[in-house]
Length: 296
Image (cartoon, rainbow, N blue to C red; front, side):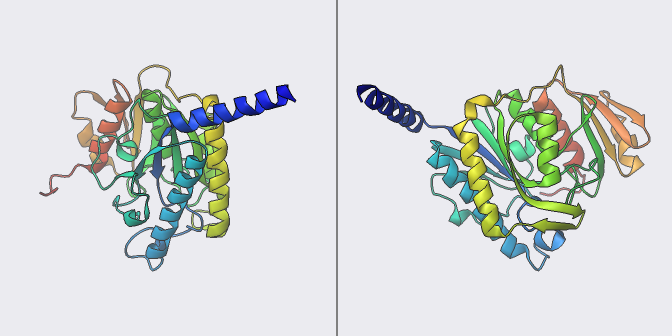
């Protein structure tokens, strides 16, 4: 009996220690991988379902925060990482949560990440432009980018962002999205919890869970990720990041090759050897965002 009481007391102390010490979690939220998303009608202000799916996005982020809190997390930074960066209904998020909104940002979908975080969670992520499966599959820009590689590996936004987190020694612990998106991130990055909320039939078609069922899966996988957070390793590249970017149009590639450190490797592709993932991120943010017509 004495032994049982000791074990129970030890377990209580261990649980309390996690809650007292707290965990700091970074949440990067996109929209294409949300429960129910299948077309552009859910993804931008002109779509007839956009307002409804802003609510679903907010609900999925809140479910993530709630489940992480139950497991001992106490501090959160949320990146609104889709479209104009102004999708989350911020008045519905907990008052102690900080939110990164709009663009440009040097670290893109991961802006604000640093060494102080214990783990990263991706919500609503999608497959890459080089993936033949997946709803709304693209990388960075569906209008311009046909491929993005890091050190010779085709990467999704999830893998790219995991490499940014890895630069700071922070692991990705959970990803939610469609089946193709979750599989792709886990295959490239490694062990993490995966919350699959829909099953793709093509670029604009899927069999999806209901929003309520999707929230249950996200809560379950978030809790599981926090409970075994020590199992996960940061995604760190072997050697400096070598970025290969392929664009739909050849003239931007031609002009980028005027830059001393940029090599044009074929009619639609450039190569850039970055100093680290911060440098790589700033390069990509510039290439895909800059225009001489930008104001103010």
